[in-house]
Image (cartoon, rainbow, N blue to C red; front, side, top):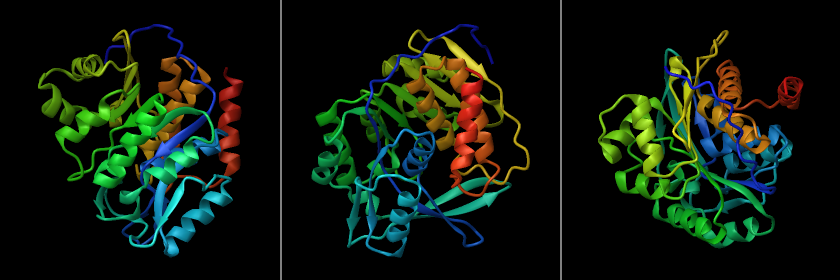
Length: 315
């Protein structure tokens, strides 16, 4: 992997509240353990741990699981103002199977997060300035939540961070194209880059070249590609490539939520104005720590305080 030895400072994001849009659900593991998750929820959880106080826009059922979501968020200090309650649909669920620590997902259809309502969401969002808007692709799988997302973006015109998070069969070429329009920062993994190249670019090139073509096609300020055991690389708006090797994981449990942890640190680093290579390094290291637990989040304030202390000490 080629790495440009450059020092690039990120542009500071405007002050305001991070808005995180999408699914909140329970990951159900083979041992029947249920862990609260969903990519947007995981990112919001980490950002709260880092002290950013995000607004999560999602929908839960009027069921026991929904009550657990509210309780967990309040215990973590997160606002629940952006949570909607749907009495007709259950709180989201995903059944996870593990093969040597690698997860596969059975994502249940017609969940509460598929029915996020625009009017309730925009009312909460407009109560404060927005620093950036995060979303993935899963919550856009149904017409209701997709229409809400598009209307929110039109009304707020925010800086957008998108984490592709492709989960079959819940995406198509048209959806991907529409969701990538206007994105400022994009994160995806190697497999997702190959899929995007096949259905949107047809370049049949090496990974870095694919990424550069994708960056240029959608005029991205930043494109981040994670490579599993090969680390990750970033391409900036000048198409310069910066890479980072994999951080060794001691006593790994599973990789559930590792990508979300990576996204959260990337967003935090953008807000802090870290240089891109530093964002890569710290995002990889934090994702490695998440691989040491079952599930995607850690409920210890001390864990985040220690992480922030380490980062501050190395500034």
